[in-house]
Every structure is written in C-alpha cells, then in structure tokens.
Length: 497
Ligand code: ADP
Ligand code: MG
Ligand code: ZN
Figure 1 (cartoon, rainbow, N blue to C red):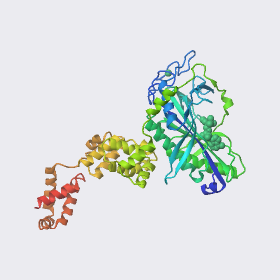
Figure 2: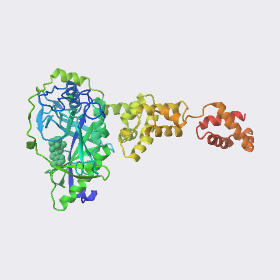
Figure 3: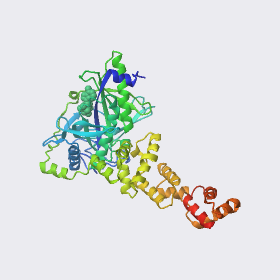
Figure 4: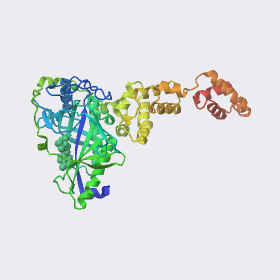
C-alpha cells in the first residue's frame, strides 16, 4: 500500500499539473483501414479480415468517414486543420496488435492547437488548451484468464479477440493544465464530461465509458508551490467512469506528494487505476518516443483535406453543447442555479432527449435530477450509464400524466426498468402496477369501506368533508396503493351526496 499525504497538505506544499489524453472510438460502420464491421459485443474474432489481422501482404485503405469525423472534432475544438498530414507507424510488440505496429499519427496530427471551455460546479469557466487531435486505430482485446485480478500477472492463459483491432480512434490531448490547485480533480472530471457531451452532440461516437468507446488517461505531476518547472508525470490508465477520473487524479496527487515529501522521486510510468480501492498501482515504465521508432506509413497516401471540404464540414456542425445549454435555459425558463443543477448532474442531454420524447421539461428534470441521480449515486455509476433511456422515462411520465400511474407506482416502474424487466409497459403488466382506474372497482371498494365505518360515512354525509380521508385510506389499502387518491376522494364525496 502506498503512502499518501493529506489532501490539504498536498495543496499547501505543491501545485498540480494535469494532462488529459482521451481516446474516442468513432461510430463509423467500418474499421479505419478495412471494411470489417465495428459492432460492439460480437462473438470474438468474427469481425476480422487479412488487413486488421495484419496478414502479410494485406494493404490498408483509409476510411473517409473517419477522416471527416476527425475534422468535425478538430473544428468543434477550435483547432487548426492540417492542410497536409500523414499516418505513422508506432512500432511495438503486444499480442493484441498483430501487425507489430499501430498505425497512428505522430508529428503530423490532423488537428492541433484548439481549446475547450468548461464550467466547474460553482459556475467558474475554465479554458483548457488542446494540443492536438490525431487519428489512429484501436488494438484488439486480451482476456487474461485464471488470475485473481484479471490482469496478466498471475493469469494461467490469455485469450485474444481482434474484433476491436483497427476500429477508428481519435486521440485528443490537452496542453498541460496548470494553476488549478485544489480543483484539479474536479477539473479533470469536468473536462471529460464536456468533451463527452461535445462528441455526443457531434454524433461521431457513442461515448460509452463503460464500454470503452471513451477512455481517459490522466497525466499528473506536482511541482513545489511557487515554482514553475514541471515535475515528472505519471499516466494513469483504465479510468472507466467520470467519477474515476476525479478519484484517480486526487489519489495520484496525494501519493506523489508523499513520495516527494519523503525525499523520493517520481518515476515516469503508466499506472493502473483500481475502481474498488480508488488507488493506482505501477504499470510499465514509460517509453520515450524514440523507443517506438516512428516512421511515416508507406502504405497510405498523405491526407490533404481541401479548404472546400473543411468548410463544408464546418457548415454542418450541429449546435454545440454550450449553445444548447443557453437555448435550453431560455426555452425552459430555468434560473442559473437550476441550469447548473442540471449540468452538474450530467443530465442536460438526457433531459433534453426526454423532452424530445414527449415529456414536459419539469417532469423530465424531476426524474433525472432527483430520482435517477440518486439511483446512479447509490450504484456508483454515471447517470448516462443507468440502464434506462430517455424514451423510457418519457413513457413513464406519460403514464403518470394520463393517470395510469401514481408517482409512487411510477417509481416502481422505473425500478423495474433499471432492473432489466423490460419496457415500462411490460413492467406495469408484469408487476401489476397500473392504477385501478376502473370506477366500478373503485365504487365497490368505497362502498365496502363506507359500510365498514358507518360513523365516518355519516359524518361525510353530514357535510364533514375532512372525514373522507379515512375512507380514502381504506380504499388505498384495499387497492394496494394502486388507486389515484384524488379520484377516490372525488368518488367518495359523490357517493355521499
Ligand atoms: P504520451 O505519448 O507519453 O502519452 P502525450 O503527449 O500523448 O504523451 O500526452 C501527454 C500529456 O501529458 C499531455 O496532455 C501533456 O500536456 C501532459 N503533460 C506533459 N508533461 C506533463 C507534466 N510534467 N505533468 C503533467 N502533465 C504533463
Ligand atoms: Mg499519448
Ligand atoms: Zn478487417
């Protein structure tokens, strides 16, 4: 177990520097250099061909959609788009990469020198510089079997799935982020959130951190307070949720501070984040770029996007998340605070989609910001990773609006959907949750309750309307809470003249 320093002390003695590398898998139909499909979750090794298996003599052909997506991403990050750039071979051996090199971009990225503005929880806006966004291909996946940790150490054997090999990736790299102090962990999370929302709006990726289509490596270093020369960084990998990004940065700050304060030095290495303990452990010593023997890819022609093409792509950029937030605030008449709650809950897109699916803005907000956020918190997952869709939430809201469900029953329906019991209507059916809206059934229950409590019945008949509460209670009990209390009350008063 590594020693860590108390967080407040870290901040008194050191200033953190951050660098965030985000890999995003593009949602193109086919891979970067061949026609294989990219569907997630297919049977292992069913989406492969000689090109992505790296068989001798196979030649790559560049996917035009992937280049267009890279340009879209670059433009929306305010980057310059290279007039001319190339792919390069990054040479290293690993079993999940059968060519023995990764086709990537090195010193000639397609997009460079941009920025992304983010809003922190209290509304402060911070500008993060973007160094570059470049194209590359994903590797296959190794599955290490037999060990306790699922990592290669201690495993009995490993399995390889090349379905992911060659899936188009864009790597987006920030400039070093300085001057954030105590808020470095929060900023790291806010950055990945903002980038995810942007990529989702661009419709270039499904940005599922839980499925690995959005992955973040967090570089962290410390320098003694008041100095400006960067310390040695570590690069924490395997950070699979927004919450983990924040935790990983914070943990690394406290671990590195303890090492430095004890007179030690930080090794430039990759580290592995462990979700269950919230700690990082050493990975491999970091290679330098010389180790990779980069050289221009001879099997692919250079990319030279014309100005016309770039401008055409620019003209098709969608409404950006920050513009959308402004518009939504006006359309739904939200206060700054209400908007911020929505943003902080990571719920803007979800609520907007729920409204698009027919719910009212206030209903949609109530579900996502209150009930579902709590569910996500208690499960330790991000809101968007809950297994319920905006369309399903909208359906539940519609059932409430039409009187088929009470709010209480609606929550049970949502619980059922989250538990994988199917669509809202199926859950209503299977769990028998529909409100008893059949008046004859309600009259029967009311008559029974009135007969059982004749003194109460007399009071109501005598004009004591407040006494109806007892009968409402009895009817609700008889219908196991599946009646609309207001309707029951109206029927009781009607019954008693
Ligand atoms: P690598 O190939 O080693 O992953 P990259 O250039 O892709 O390197 O990414 C390194 C990231 O770390 C960038 O975001 C960069 O801004 C950031 N960075 C560079 N030096 C430091 C440092 N000393 N401390 C923290 N972050 C750093
Ligand atoms: Mg990198
Ligand atoms: Zn292929």
